[in-house]
Length: 116
Image (cartoon, rainbow, N blue to C red; front, side, top):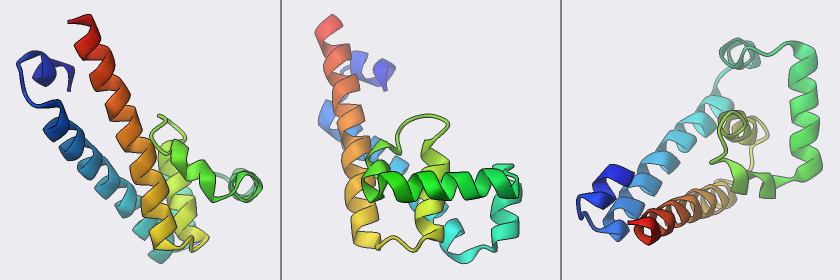
């Protein structure tokens, strides 16, 4: 994104495209959590039964608003998969995930444009 901004591409177009693509990836994770078996999910995430239970408890502890942080590396994918497993309402999922990811790209664009 930084290189494209420095080449003069519209920050708004880049934000919309990056957010849309990133949310689509998160939606795929949600679908995997929603429809895949727990055995497949644990294998894909490389989680033991104990780790899975702890992750589920943490998600339940912090609630659906933790999805706002789905943009964070390492924790983002498991958060979105867990949302599917727990059958979080899709409208809330999309709203929180899209907001978090969009704000991330807004900050990135702002920082790049301020330093160039």
